[in-house]
Amino acid sequence: MILRFFAAALLVYAFGFLGFAVSLPKPLAGEPTDAVIVLTGGPGRIARGLSVVDQGLAKEMFVSGVDPEVRPAEFAAEFDVSRGTMECCVKLGYLAVDTRTNAGEAAQWLRENKFTSVRLVTTDWHMARASSEFEETLPPDIRVVEDAVTSHPSLATLFLEYNKLLAAVVSQGLPS
Image 1 (cartoon, one colour):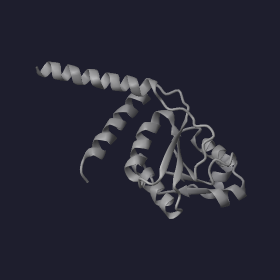
Image 2 (tube, helix red, strand yellow):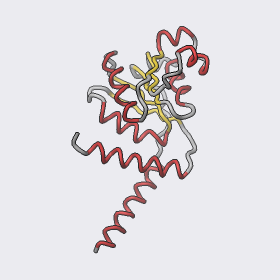
Image 3 (tube, helix red, strand yellow):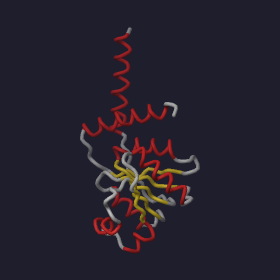
């Protein structure tokens, strides 16, 4: 009986992983939002966020999880952002150290600016967990759309991220 239970649990886990691995989200095209939130930590994320602003699909971009030693001028130089765009449209967040604190830092910025819709930009393999953390943290009146940066993750990356997603979902279900 116990062996059957563990076999069934392993089967559910394996099929869940398979579903996660084959259904990674794609980039979003053309949907405007008030703002774009970019989570640091992966290639192409900041470039995607800047592209969204340049296309006029979002008024402002908030980059969450920036290293405290990075100054706005260094950021602008690294990502070829004009001074005008930095001043009007790009805000750097230095408080977040992980996906959960990204959501908290972004939620505070969104509330302060009274935004009602946001585009979440992160890597495709990271989107499920990031979206889950944002859904848990943001007020229900803020609409979040997912805009994934396409990558080619290794099996190890997918396995690790799937387990982090499961841990996040379990921790969100626990009372605070």
